[in-house]
Length: 387
Image (cartoon, rainbow, N blue to C red; front, top):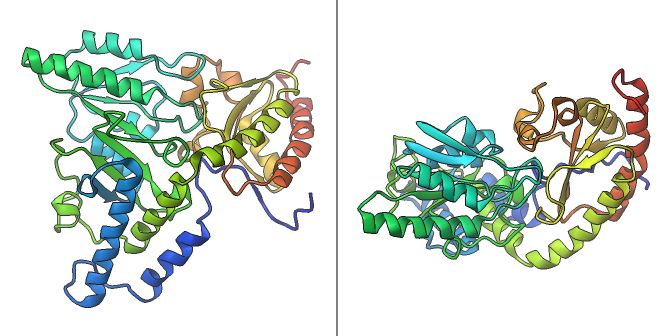
């Protein structure tokens, strides 16, 4: 491959390149129609109508009424808001830190086992042991190892649980899912999946950074998150990021269009990477091979540090990660990999590869050409590697 100083970008789980359609859509709201959408003059009202349209686009992608969509500044903010009123929570051991660091009150952590998937029967047992649970939050797709969780089954379980609670005169349990990694990659239908609260973010699906959304099912009593003005129907004050919201609407429409076709193409690329990387000595795939996003893989290499591997790849203009971008500065091994049961020394040597619809076969060729010699070089330097 002739790179011509172009970075081979394989870190789309961290963020994605803004699409051409999104860039075209947002530019007028940055350069020309910059008015405050709360203003009564035409420029402001034009921007208000643009926000309304974007809300409709996001709602259509999730199959819900537009009134159930609230715009935020990020998926992290959406997660924090969803947990804002909870007192008794059941979640999984390997949730994003935007969940694990934000949960309040009593918390039960579900195991995820070596395949990185929550078992519905474990949740059922936890509910029976904690009948006063008011919120279950399980991410739709793990952000590090990309395993797909049984969200529809969990939603059905909680719906049945709530029917029994209603008959017994007990309180209801809400179901929240962090779908930041899922939307645009797998079909999401909040009605069919019995989801009460759902978090998403624009920059994970070729939109702008700095804008997210929280779906809140009608009837859910969620308190306002930011007080001040009357934006977002009084629940989330602050002048709206009009350009980002407009871009979000365009991005999510693009993302949910032809998911099956996009995934079929990504599966071929994923299989090429998997088959080649697994030829390297003492490497393991983290998480289930089949129940995962079509464009993501997470490997652990014995005898080397993940940070050293990333630096060596960077010297070849290859961008990847060792886990969540939000904790990339941490020297601690990934809590996700530790939850799978990996020992510290193996969890330290992880590499996350995440593709998008922009990833080319030539980029994959270049990556696969350079990864094996880099691993070999680092193992030769490692004081803990024994062939």
